[in-house]
Length: 77
Ligand SMILES: [Zn+2]
Image (cartoon, rainbow, N blue to C red; front, side, top):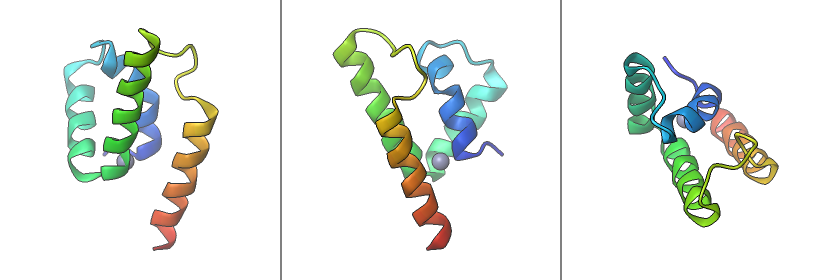
């Protein structure tokens, strides 16, 4: 099963349509059950739409920090 961390590492390939089918499937399954990652993907799409391309870093530090904070909240909940 794909983890949230794993998903964030695949998101660039996902948005560029470069994921192999099995990885793409894991990605979709994780999205289906994880609203945090759905939110993350939405943010990434907005970023791409705004910049016209993917950021050079897979994840802007501000988003990464926010995600890490949420994941920590999730674990302690
Ligand atoms: Zn997730």
